[in-house]
Image (tube, rainbow, N blue to C red; front, side, top):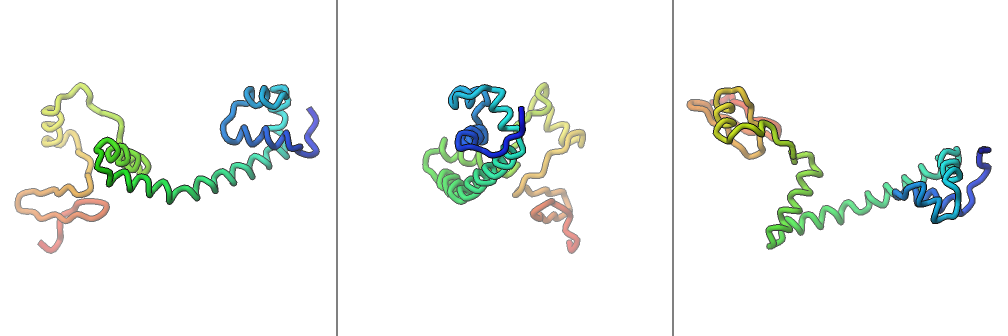
Length: 152
């Protein structure tokens, strides 16, 4: 297929459909073009440049919605309905990388895990707000870690 010299409105419409997630076969059917033609448009230099422009526009739209998303999550966290509040907390935790969905040591009981933590075989991850106290030592908590306080 020869390189495109310009993009028609139909080409641009097909590229916009692809940019928002439509499958090439669906675009071809809706636009009454062959699948080979759709792939040719996508691969062309002009098609690639246009797709990059469209993707920047879409990215800008998503960024402009960020404040609204934060407000919805904040309102959800304050909702009296526990399921809404939990769903909002789940979204916030996932968005901030604080949500760990994998379960390690599935074959161990809770008692086994606690015994491993106490023995030092298994280290419990630090959770913000958790205080670690050992007899005779005073610890201070920073944003990033818990460490012995030096002035005690």
